[in-house]
Length: 203
Image (cartoon, rainbow, N blue to C red):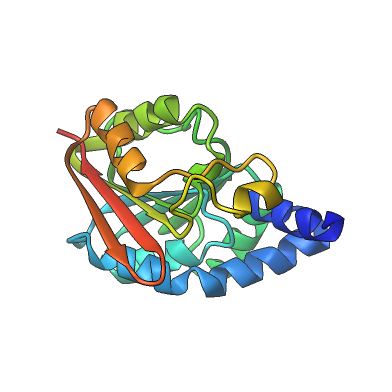
């Protein structure tokens, strides 16, 4: 159990060799959830987008493919993740893709910058979720979209015992958090086996 905990704690904050292996794993395994979740948003050309908890950087590439002339930003609390995301996007880094270290609790971007903010398999680890959602709302343009994508959809999930610092939420809870934070047009989408995407729009 100790080794398992160590492995999956790298899911929350990848570090070292084990963290690098986990980032490679996440880039592959999050693809079905991410591709489906992004298909629910009518992404336009020329959008400016942010992926919070960008991990190994694969979502940044997926966003770029969906919007010609886009600028895509990624932020992650893990130094290892930032390094991997930069490597994965090396051909467009600092041109169309911009990656930095930081937290969802204090986003280093100006008000109203983004057309879309995504959060793939990461809200479980955000400190003070309501406060973080206010930060997301702040950096979105009026009419901007927020997409939360999760695979763990039960509050009593066994994963919360394995991954240190993890809090699981039901899609209904996440929708309520978005409603409380002032998002409109909030929707829950589900897909088997346990995928959920929760969407909201900044008015």
